[in-house]
Image (tube, rainbow, N blue to C red; front, side, top):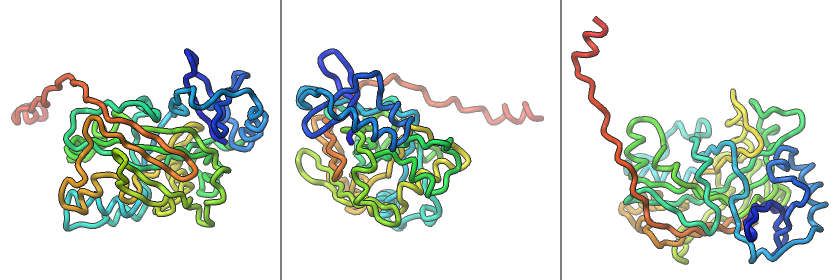
Amino acid sequence: MKLARWQYSDQVEEGLVIDDRAVPFTDGVGIQDLLDWGLARALEYGRGAAGGAGRPLADVVLLTPLRPPAIRDFVAFEEHVEGVVRSVDSSNGVVPQWYEAPTFYFTNPHTLLATGQTLVPPASERLDFELEVAAVVGGVPGSDGRSLTPEEAQQHIFGYAVFNDWSARDLQSREMQVRLGPCKGKDFASTLGPWITTADEVADRLDADGFLDLAMAVSVNGREIGRDTLANMGWPFRDLLAYASRDSRIVPGDLLGSGTAGSGCLAELWGRAGELTPPPLRPGDEVTLTVEGLGTVTNIVGQPLPSPAIPRARQRPGSKAVKEHA
């Protein structure tokens, strides 16, 4: 089933997308409730709700399908890592440490965009998109989501959604030279949608090792820029969830991004071309991500808003520390 949130007239509703209909839940149940219950109970509830009165999908405005407690975004595609590294240092390939364990960063759950919304970017000369899929965590009876094995983690995968991790590459490059981040180069926006597709809908595309063979593509202004398959991840989602839970905890509603697919962002293509081709995004550009079985999200790049100036750090006089610790 497909779970969505939408605006209809002056109301925000949550429910099912069935073909070309939006069927709202009518008993006070919301998507977070279904995530808390876990997939099996949610599917049972969904079968009962599917017969409700719906409205044409064309008459509603889709919103982000949930408000996640946390978003971890991984970097799980070897081809993407290799291309981005080349954009920084043409003599290097993938760093050996990448192969040892999945790597992720936390991004902002409060700046999610829905399909159709305008992106308001920071002032950036190298604005970029990232073609990804997010796994949505669900509850499992008797599990608190801590230090899971990959087999246990698989049971926590409730569903999937298309994910765009927007990036300001010039800001990202500067801040990561401080050996921390990314932060302001990333946290201004991510797109999630158009809905959550439950894991059973694509179970036939899951191989014995846990990889999903779903075609992924991104276009700018109608021109395809990149294409890949989700099956090219270096780790399956169950391993990413298990790693995220190690000495920690995942909870229902958490999102885990796959990282960028091969050829799924401009920075990777810049690294391979040795120049800014295709060009960075500009106001008015339309970016569309499509993932087989999960749907399509589209956003238009808007104008950046002015940001308040922050002064440079005060430099400490060299003699001050000596006097204080003398």
